[in-house]
Length: 492
Image (cartoon, rainbow, N blue to C red; front, side):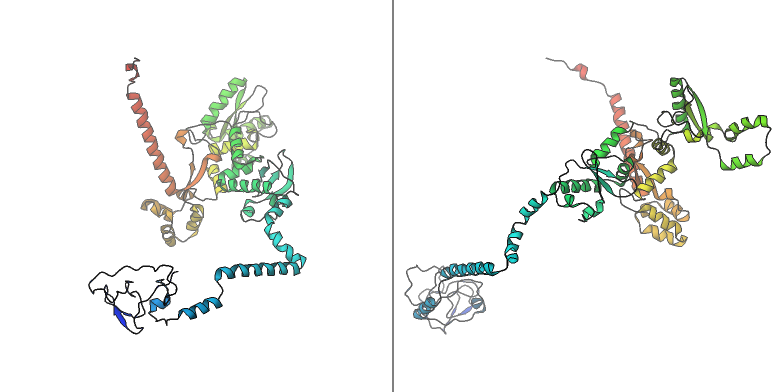
């Protein structure tokens, strides 16, 4: 920075600023308060102070005192005086101190020479440490090449645990498994190094864990129960949906009349007949054994009619179709069943059909299966509503009100809260909701279309669906009343 030249005034004299009237030291060329330049002796007192100017670079031999022109200099901010120095002393100091621009390259060269000497004198292990750290990425790539790449990895979820088993693209098991939680915690100890060190394999596993963690508990359970091999959870769910029979119903549950109608229709097509399948009650059987034994000629007839005479046929069992050869047909899919066992044991062709039939026909079984999968957690607000029900049920009656008031269920009406306090019932706390509404064809569905909702969330969703149904009915009615005006259009 170019030096500034002070006026030839005594060092002890003071001068007043013409702008703020502040008394400044005689050594200060500018006002400490407003930074206005000191006026000259010949300038009139009322004249405007001149603006500061920079002296030309040629004026180097004149007597001057160098001060810092920076406002942030602590010496100027505190108002300390600085003793003037002669140009000769200043030139001597400049000659003693070498310029910084010339000093930096020399120091850098000395530092480089010292580093080279240290590296040459250091042991071989220390000398290779820097090169190993610098080329760590290249070393990892070279090390990855030593492991096998498994393109198109397939996964299979265990139906009993949370483990995921690995298979090759051709379906060959790799005898390796992991839990998604361990991978999310960066714990790769259970997998071979080919999956943790090889980049291609590691990306496939991480992508699967990300997709799997984003699924709902119900969809994870469906993939576990299926036992299928799939490249990704999304593709696995699509395969399951394609394998299922298309079903759409506006009825919530499958009644016995619906089963009887389907069995009669199938029997007519097969040219067979129907039979009534009942489950013999335990107490009815004991009562019949305790009664007097009938004659031998009537014993066979009484045993065959024992379970059907106690209750009406519509309440005691289902009507099942039988083909022309006497082979019973499944109540769910109308396929041939096994002939071994009693009539009650030959209702279905497989365990899958039995579970599907029970889900479609029994509300109790449906609630138990949804509770088993989702653990009673509301899928909308995240409230552990089943656990809350158990706590309220086991708590003393005088504490139930306090427990309910501190939860999300406190929004319910006083009448419902009083019922839950007096006699807590599981159905008052949470419901099984159809993801695809029943009025849209989502009735009599599988587990994939069911979810757990607390009473408050279920009530809000039901009100929203009722509003949507009302708008649909209004739009349909308006479309029927409105006339078609396209017949008035003509082409020019």
